[in-house]
Length: 450
Image (cartoon, rainbow, N blue to C red; front, side, top):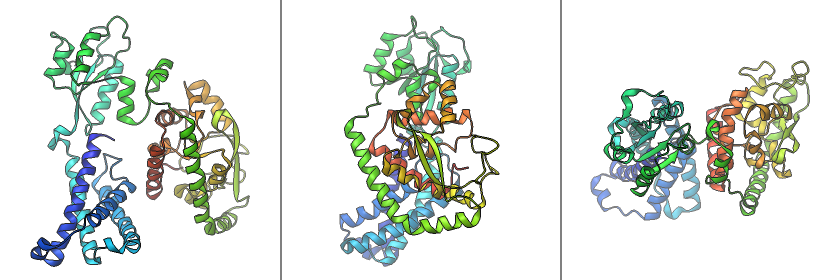
């Protein structure tokens, strides 16, 4: 989570407190409010529910939301907050506020939240929020990192490029900083907080002593793949070597994590099937009425350790969908999808039977999505490190699914692999919970399906 997102969250927390006190003032008048007694647990419960609902509707994950989208998500967050607070106050009546105060506080919070998010997204008003970055290098990799800095303007500001005169100049020359007094002096002069080493070849040209001076003085020094991972939540496959996998932080999946993940999978999948079981016969009946063919669709997929298993879904395509074409990726507005199937895919209802795969142990709730053997064989030949995604169990949902649309080409597979390897590298129960919460937001806004 970057500084910009943390600032948004901290501001929302303060606004939740402010909204509650403002609601009392509006409801009862300033005089009564000044003498009102607020129990800490009452205020904290209200504020935490507001924050949780905002996380749930993804107010903090996307930094480029339009005003209309911000307003819509804020309204949805308030609706969720109402139900959560109702359940909480029913369970713990001692922390309950009156309905009038709660409604007013929620309305004030929603209004202030939208204004705060719009204001903060104008980073020119708060330039200190973004971290200043100096890029060492002038070649194509340095240009790629500079473009990434510009694209993440809420997080980073480009201080310039430092030319070691060991590679061609592909970056804008006016953004190259003077190098007469050395790298460390350039870092101090341009007040850089992060140095990104973006050299296509380091041997014989790497300024070791200058980098040590930067590091010891408190400046963060990273290489291009690490910076790319920090900024995007995915891996820079083109510039990663086997040694990077070996020596980088992460990829620490031990038996304890596997056991905890399995316990979460079994518990959550079991509860999920129990909750949706009354609706499964209705879905099955609608599929039968919509088109001829079986209710369930079974297909061979590749799982952990490159082992094949049978994946179960609700059928969303015609029964003869691949009789002529064979195995092909789904397309946008795919004509093979039935009328009901389009809704099942958009709402992700077709994925519910995969909870049985989770209980059987073939899948996890969170992990890289399993691909078909025909695609895997082709992708292994074309994409480096593709097999590494099979180090963990495939998932019903995953980091790639909440960050990138449905894959429909080799190019999409490369992009999704960047996210999948990021997940494998940083796997944890907290990351799984974050992905599950974001998945609900993706379903609510019907993003990424085909």
